[in-house]
Every structure is written in structure tokens, then in C-alpha cells.
Image (tube, rainbow, N blue to C red):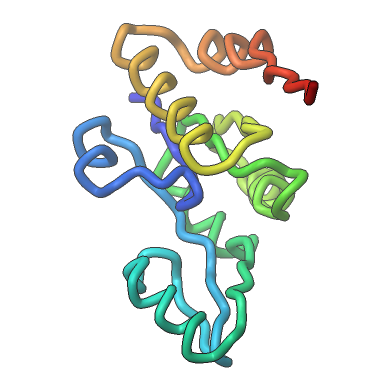
Length: 152
């Protein structure tokens, strides 16, 4: 089976992850001198911390070792992550893949965040479930273009 993998910035809830057999690796959140994995705090708790401390949270990509551990059970898969223009997540995932020898994991830079990533990940799961192979799914993403928005 082709594993569909993403990061927590895809904002897919546990029900969607389970229903579509998708695995997600959490980014880390730093606020109030504490480190949390994305998902450990509810949105309300995070907003409360921001209000109490006056600090905005900072995020950090998973480490290379965390990615190695995340990728190891997946002999074949596609990882779709937060835009490389916004995070070091894609870079760390590529470094992790270079350390692994028996995995066929395609890395896709979503060039997006949040719902944009989630939609791409769900589509990849649909294509996998329709019988597409790993290379066809990965190549299909090279044909996607992001819309240009012009201000009038």
C-alpha cells in the first residue's frame, strides 16, 4: 500500500486522517518558554496563552531524526508538506529521505499551508484508493499551478 503522509499544518482532524489512512507528523510550537507538539494545545488554549503572555507562537519543523522515524514504517509513500517558502519542513524531510535506503518516498512541496495542503493530501489518498501508483500520483502534482491573485 502507498502511504499518504503529511505534516500537522494540513489541519486534517483525526477522523479524516483515520478514514483516509493518512499519517501526520506534528510541527512544534514554542510559546511562553515551553515547547508543544502541534495538537497538544487546543486552539482556545493557544489563544489564551497568546493573550496572557502577549507573545506570538513560533513553530519549528520536525527534526531529521523525527522524519526518519516517521518515514521508516512506510516502504512506499508520498509526503505532502507545508510550503518550503514558509518552513524548513520540506528540507528536513528531504534530508531524512537521503538517510534511508529502502524507502520509496516522494516528497511534494505543497507551496501552500492549512486547507490548501489538506486538500492536496486528501486528493492523493483518493488517487491511491482509485489504484494509481506512486509515480503517477507524484507526477500529477507537477501539473498543478497555484492561482495568481491580482489586486485591482
